Length: 142
Image (cartoon, rainbow, N blue to C red; front, side):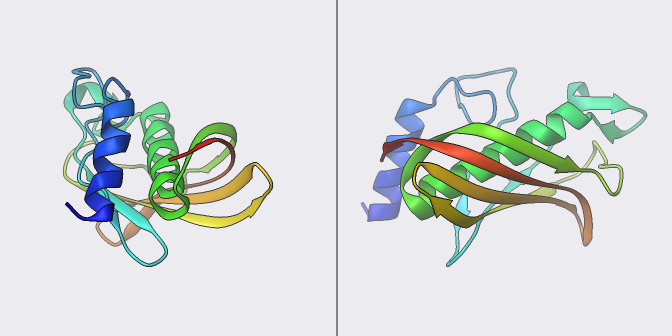
């Protein structure tokens, strides 16, 4: 098993009931198959009908949760640390469709002591529908 696969397995064992990525949470987002590149983490998200706010548009709180999740995974996979959200700033330049597959991306912008500065984006096809920046607090080394 590669180091990357070992890290994923360790994370999964800690967060099995997580709303964003927990495999045993039937009400969650179902985010899975996170991919690590040199400087970012990506994951596809296929919303369910109960995630919409109105008329084919993904609920803003679901968008926020998905961005928070991919940002936390960028901390875990890029920096090797477990984090909790300290602050989260959101922008919604376009409505996010609730049908189809979306792409989430998380990156690490910097670190100051126990504070980690992260960024996330949500795309529907080529359209950026939402973005987030946040300060996350490092709780443990993974």
